[in-house]
Length: 109
Image 1: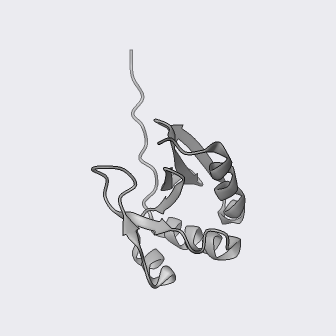
Image 2 (image 1 turned 120 degrees about the vertical axis):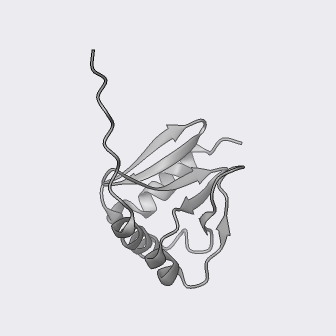
């Protein structure tokens, strides 16, 4: 089931204070980026955040689930999705720990 654009817009509004946030549509679902780093996914109208040590400590009681079949488990955010301050801080602490985006190789003719 593809995610609803209204849910995506709601999540983006909740995390607008976490940096330069963008969402890119991928196969009916969405990848979430902060300052160019992929940090999460929205799949089936659920928010998944890439697992990091700092994020795990911040959340405290983590629920993990795979966003889609065959994917690595991520942090599933349900209870605190309406807490903008908490959610924005989770994104900030998680993104700090994620590696920088890989540079794409330019195709030479």
